[in-house]
Length: 199
Image (cartoon, rainbow, N blue to C red):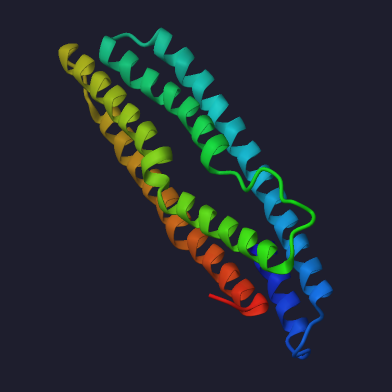
């Protein structure tokens, strides 16, 4: 995303001295920006889906081998959470299916800005569709482990530390998405609005 931001900044700076860009040039820029964003979204989605597939496989296998019912339930929730992430990304995280090549500048501008708005909304809700199901499953699994260890008369320090670590990692992921990711997307969207005019 940073490279995208730098490219747009360079583009904006190089375009600034020319007060009236020709319509064809602006349309070309809008088409290229739309294609670049779609490629970026597709790459991100592929990476996220691959990671979610690994989560599904690993935690599904772990659920089958878990020693208690509560641990199995928690690990199964994490595994199913991976499938949910894949579904959500494929249905809500993509750009428009196919942009009509015959669109004018105003239409391309609208599509591009809506793409950025959609990605901003996706990042703003990451705690619900991404982190929430995984976190809930890990909490349940670790509660199951703690209960089992208590029954066996052993220390529950391991599950407690695991929950603390998972909470810190998930909080960091949430902050990165909602502060850094959303901030960058909004900044690029704002530059596009300045470049193309409008809202």
